[in-house]
Image 1 (tube, rainbow, N blue to C red):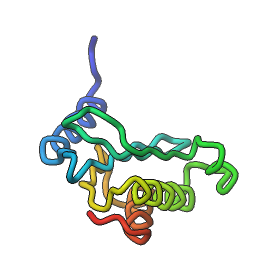
Image 2: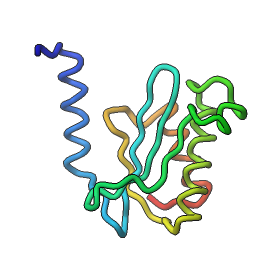
Image 3: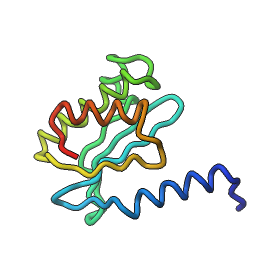
Image 4: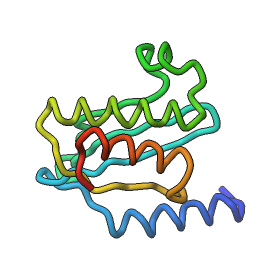
Length: 121
């Protein structure tokens, strides 16, 4: 299977971020994925290989708050919801994995909302 240049560059960026960020039971990893229509975030423990908490704009409760899942407002709602769920489970500190994306726009909005709600990273 041949991978084109842009996909290869995206994978390289992703691997460069992932070799520095690891989720442990004490400090799990908050990973962000954004598509053209939605944004997804999950908190994972890489040692156990388990997802502890997740939120996205595809969840019906969040879709009602923001009908468009591809803007900063939707990313803020996802960040707040994820942080509230994490706090209820007992997670306070996380390592932030921005994946292959620049830290601006929707990714930054999600991170700032999670920080404002109480997550530390």
